Amino acid sequence: MADLHNKKNEQEGKETVEFFKDLDKEALNIEGFLEKNAKVLSIGFGILIVAVLGWFGYQQFILGPKNEEATKSYLSAQKNLAEGKDDLALGGKSVANPGFLGTYEQYGSTEAGKLAAYNAGLIEFKKGNYQKAYDLLDNFSSGNKVLVALKYGAMADCLSNLNKSDDALAMADKASSASDDAYTSYYFTKKAGMLALALKKNADAKKYFAAIDEKYQDYDNGQSDAFIEMTKYY
Image 1 (spheres, rainbow, N blue to C red):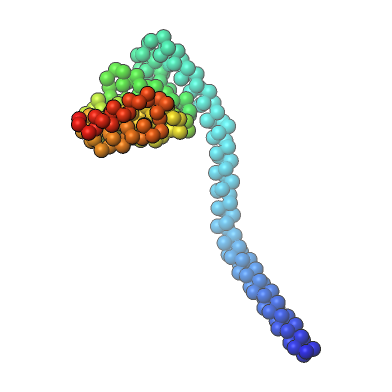
Image 2: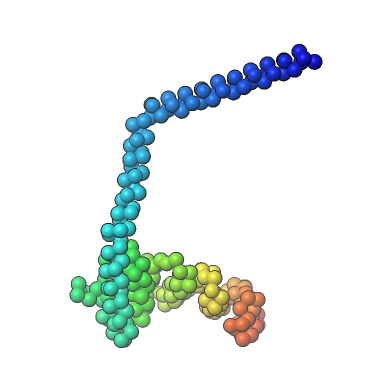
């Protein structure tokens, strides 16, 4: 029994030694790798530090002041828009009055610059410049899902006016699912349904109006039932 116990201990001892030998080999491999690639690793680490410091510098010394300048420019254009001076609000014709266009062109990387593209797009739409409006709206981006849904909805209107009805329907569909806000989703689901009905895509239209009947009855006052009936005969 004692011999069995000793053999077991001896076996475990050998396994432990082998285990630590393997560890030593791994350690040597790692050390060798580090020695061999020390120059490359130090360059990589240096690049990483420069990139991080560059990002912080950009945020602090470039983007910060740009945000402030962009906001001032945006608010000036917004004031003209509120006063009904659409041409001045659109701007883009002089340095003295950059307007929404100039604000977007100069500060497109800032939040105010992005929002300026959206407002400029809406003004161009009002003026009947649907392709310009579409392109400006396409350049707008935001973390606000409602604004993104409104962007897609306005782009759908541009496409409708450019006689690109199928594309308009696809964009309205995109608008209907872009936001978590119930009313916004209802509004654009209905728009998509109406477009589908006009295109005689009755199966698609029925799908949209059925979704309204199921999810958005509070906003629709039962109108979806009438539209569902229309898909059977229209």
